[in-house]
Length: 323
Image 1 (spheres, rainbow, N blue to C red):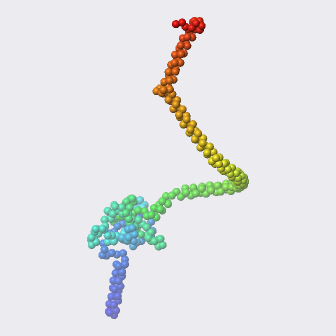
Image 2: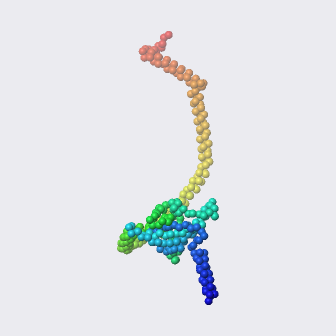
Image 3: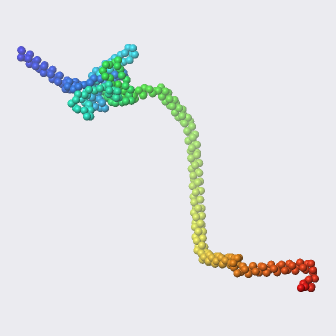
């Protein structure tokens, strides 16, 4: 009997050891590695988030959710959900740091540098959520010192939450009213088109028939004009050929005329040269002309004197001048 109790006790003790080992190995407990605890305070819904949910930084798991508590402030009637997370510093490697050194995370400094937490869906099938960490200087750091005493990581809205917030701010009633007005306008336009389109279609048919007739008339006129243009082009071609023939025949006459014109121009040049020599002050012909003109001037002066004498004494014509 005592041996059986000893065997049963050894079996139970072994089972407990195996259970503790399984919990240590496969659970979220880190007995040999340092951990850091922080708080993330949410005010909205954290549906799908549970204890043990992963905490990631840009997809890399760096911790897990340790506990979730709901706190209500009766004065402000505000509900806060502080979520305690357990971070594992050994999962982070810092360049230039000794790997054997024990690392202590300064969460307050990281939060001041822009570390923010957001709630994202881990799986759309199961609806489970997780907490994602990242740096975002644009997100305001809203802290809640009255809610938790742990180092707090400020939160920011996730992409889905921002979309939901933008959709909630849309003036849906105004959009529905405008859409209803647009539908009514379209209905009125459709009714008006139903009334106005048949006469318009008939008018278009009449216009189309008239246009077809005009096209036929224009086609005939163009064909007639084309035949006339062909005849005109034929005549112009014949005229050009005749002109070419006449130009060829008159080529010799034009050549002779040009030669005669050249000879005439040369004779005119010689005549001009002779006139230039006559009018030249140094030429012999010019000297003879000047002497002749002086003689003529002297004879004219003598005749003028004789005429004056005869005018005073007409007898001079009979007796002449006495010496």
